[in-house]
Image 1 (tube, rainbow, N blue to C red):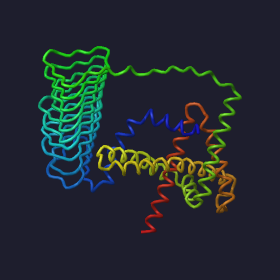
Image 2: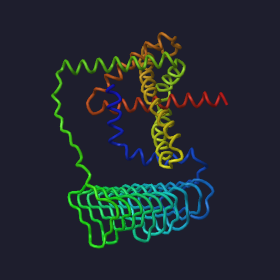
Image 3: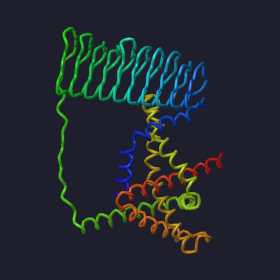
Image 4: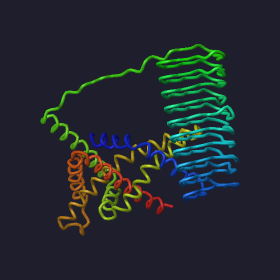
Length: 390
């Protein structure tokens, strides 16, 4: 199972980049897209479809009942209205826009004027919501420096090094930070729960509900003993057997899918890589967007379940492709393998992939590449089968 831990480690290290890219790509299945891409982009006027804008400097001023996706060095949403604004960039500004929700990630995020009918979710280095902005639902704001001055119609969760809450909040407030300030204009109708090295409640602040100190975060320190060579070999053998059995089982259950996907991996690796990269990024991003909309939460769980099923199939297809590649090097590539040969070469590819995965530094990247190629092969075959069925 160490193959999955290597893959998960790469995803954790590079997940933020993939998430931003995936969130933007995920607009595709939702509806027809009005897409713009240039160095400087201006998306304005009435829109009857999802709007996607990407460039160095992006300005959004649209009137739409659909979602707006934006990515750039500088992104500014001003005037107009939209359903969800999902934006990623270095500097993000919202001014004079009527939105249902805002989901933003960037270095500096500032909500200046306008309103959201529902929620705000913002992650960045400096995150602020000014008094002239109104949040109709709840607010989730995380960053190094967080400043909330906008009135909030629901609950607030804020976390960062320096956090300041200085507005009217209809619901409860949960805040975590090194230095937390409850400003003089704070009017918290619910409870205040906090975890902070330093808490200041300024004169004039009103907190109607109880104040609760959150328990300190548990920090577990576990020093593992270095494994002996025999233990390392044992772990590798066990992991290799487990992975080979999984790949063999999938090849028995889905012989046609594994055979076609495996052959595509070594015959058309570029196409398989492109398709696989898109599928592995878009699928969890679509699930995230559906989860945020709440209405699509049940569908989000279905999409995540399909993604969890896709990953082991992708790894098995990648191993099968590696096995077929070795088979072709022996001069048997032109012959179509029977089921027994297909199973045998799948096992060979599984063992080789496990061995390559143990190479320092590059091993994890090899496993990730095999997963991407396998996902491309599986997705392409399934798409052809669905097209033929229709």
